[in-house]
Length: 103
Image 1 (cartoon, rainbow, N blue to C red):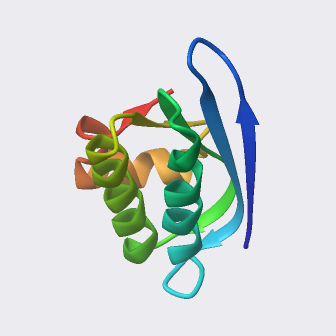
Image 2: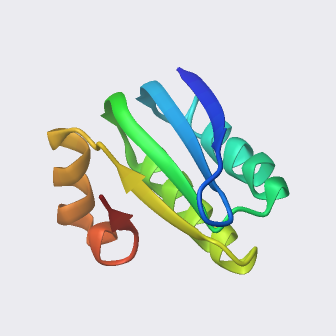
């Protein structure tokens, strides 16, 4: 799995974290690490771009929720965009879509 962090400035700043590959028990912790690093720039929004994620398991889902809690406690918000049908289905089935904003 690749995690690419890209800073984009817009009204206080948005950090886009692009995730490619599988978010499973082996790789998912990298996403939270990227979110923690991204909040150092004090953005208003941290965006997880999951368009390139072809598989996510419960550990990946857990890391998204941990990232959501971390960003909230850091004074910014987390948004997930471009999620694949499989990711959206998992978020809906587990109720995560009621907690984490999906764009």
